[in-house]
Amino acid sequence: MVPETTSSRRLTKVLVKVTVDRSFGAAQVVVSTDQETVKDLVKAVLKIYAAEKRRPLLPETNPHRFELHYSCFSFESLNEDEKVINLGSRDFFLCKKPVDDNMITNTVNVNTSFSEEVKKKATNSSSFPWTQFMDFLL
Image (cartoon, rainbow, N blue to C red):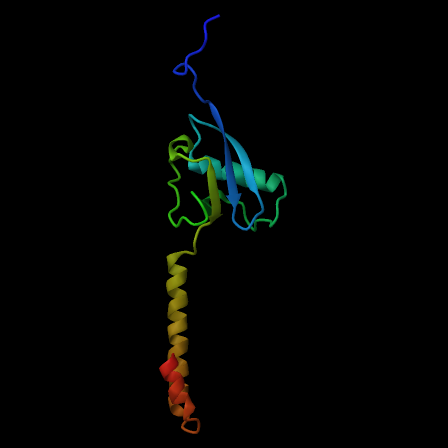
């Protein structure tokens, strides 16, 4: 019997741990090193999370609404088409994608129009002089 050399051995599957935002403990997934991408890993984690009935329950399990990070302290999400084996880690963090930019700008526009309305009412009411100070705070 000929002993195997390290060059002839090759990993075919690895165990990856993914912590879902606000959940206790990581979901463990066995992924293939050749084919699995970040997108595939997100789908697998969401499927396992739902099958194990982990808490808190996710309001949705659409994999396109989630993104994978190296940790909960990482702001940059991982590329969906990147292969898992090339990431250099086996521990990840899964969270929902941030709110759409259009929704944020609409909220800002509503808030600015509301503050302008408050300023108009404050300047029209002369019986309350302290409202002039409120404009300074806004």
